[in-house]
Image (cartoon, rainbow, N blue to C red):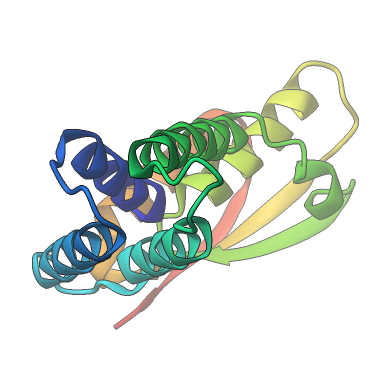
Length: 169
């Protein structure tokens, strides 16, 4: 959700007709508040919008040419690069080696796509001849039960033993 929020704000800036720093910051702040008001638990979305607003504040400095359009294009380019790298990092996770050593037990919760991808990568490596065997204890949150069940099912399909999955209300 944080990356999606940043991506939405970048697209907003690309479509906006703001031509001053103040208008740009005001627009992003207003749209960030609107996005946060549309979901019941906006913590992760707030992380993304706050990060992007801090980035804007530190980047919206006058250049030697004094052209706001040059600054705006720089922001859009760097923002798109950030989103692209963040999305790529999710699918290219190699961190599983640090968490899934042979014989380890991994305790996790929720429905995080990043954690699900990390564990799936470890399971794929194990299935393709690797010697990493691990188990998962999964704690479910009722609010994210659909995502959690999907992650558990996916892990079990890949041969990862999910020892328990407890429900937290």
